[in-house]
Image (tube, helix red, strand yellow):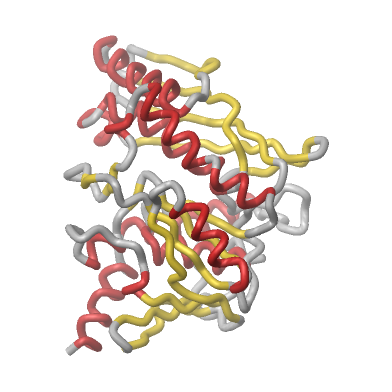
Amino acid sequence: MMAHVLTSLLHTLRNARALAGKQDIAQAAAILKPDNSAAIRLGDDCAAIPDGDGYLLLASEGFQDSFVRAMPWFAGYCGVMVNVSDIAAMGGRPVAVVDALWSDTSEAAASILTGLHDGARTYGVPVVGGHTNMRSTHNSLSVAILGRARRLLTSFDARPGEVLIAAIDLRGRWHDPHPFWDASSALCGPEGGTRLQEDLGLLPRIAEDGLSRAAKDISMAGVLGTALMLAECSGVGMTITLENIPRPECAPMERWLSAFPSYGYLLTTHPEDAAAVMARFHGRGIAAAVIGQCNGSQRLDVTWNDRTETFWDLAQTPLMGFAR
C-alpha cells in the first residue's frame, strides 16, 4: 500500500506546474549558453559578481497579473520578501531594491507600492528607485535586489558525502488559495522585522564560519524540486527521507511538498558540522533537520516509511540545463 502511495505522490510532484516552470529555464539556458567555468555562473539564486574581498549579489523576481490583481498589497510585500530570501540563500545581506510596476489604476498601484514599502521597512532594505506605469492594461510587478556577501553559499558546491539539512520556519499559516506557507506577513513592521532580519542573518554567518558552502532557498518547486535544482547544479545525487522533513501538524505530506515557505532553506554540510548548523536555527525557534545525503548518483531518490523510489534521474533528464 505504501509503495503505491509513494509512487502516486512522486508522480503528482514530478508533473506539477511549478516543476515544469523550472524545466522552462532550460530554454533560456540554451539561448544564453552559460559558461559555468566563468567568474559569474548562471543558475544560482543570485548572480554573484566578484567585488573586492567579497561579492555583489544581484537577483530579481516577477509576479503575474492574476496574483497582483488578487492580492496587490501582498504582491508588493512579497517583492521584498522573496528577494531578501535569495540574498540570504547565497550567504549575503541585502543592500537595496528597485521595482518595475505596471497598473491599470492609481488605486491599484498605491496598494502594491504600500506592500512594497511595508516589506522594505520590515526587512530593513530600502527601495531606491525603479519604473512606474499607472496607465497600463494589466497589473504586473517585478522587483530586483542588490546584496553583498563576504563568503558565498552556492548551488554549485554540494559534494558527495555531505548531508542535506532543511531549515523551515513552521510558525506560520497557509496563505490560501496559494500554496504558500506564510511565516512573515504577520510580523510586518519594525518589531517583527527585527526578528525576521536576524533569522535571515543566520545564513551569512553560517557561510562566514565555514559551516556550509552550498544552499538554496525553497522555491515554488517545493522541497524536492529545490533539492533537484541544487543536485543538478552541483552534479551530485541525493537521497531524501520524507518523514525527516520539518512539517507543521496541519500540513498533509503532498501539500507540504508542494509548498513555498516564506522562510525555508536547504543546506549541505559535512556530517560532523550538521549539529552545529542545526543548532543555529534551533536557537531562533526555526525547525531544522537532516533530511538526506549527497552522493555521486545524479539521481534524487526518495524514502518514505522504508519505501524508496527515484524521483528524478538527472543523467537521463536534465532539469534546468545548468550542470556544474
